[in-house]
Length: 126
Image (cartoon, rainbow, N blue to C red; front, side, top):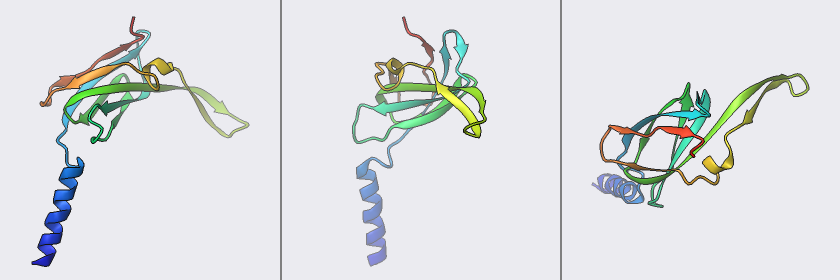
């Protein structure tokens, strides 16, 4: 009996902490200067500070994420391959999307409580 009570309390604590928050599918396209972002990340930061951000990989201009409903700040970053650096013995990448779309982003998206959310971002935004 005591084990069941402990398990029930643990589940309740997770539910209260937001770890068990319902999420919905968000898909979309991301372009930079008219070209697909080949290798990048998109992060949704819920305005509800009790919910965790969601990051998804952008591959060939497309992404898919599971995000809690509500208004989110969106940050986008991307890298391009500069080739192999013999001094460093590795491939080198550079970030090319400016901070106004990631660290200083004003991009937002309202995630609806359904799996049909589409959020396309064609950067730069004029």
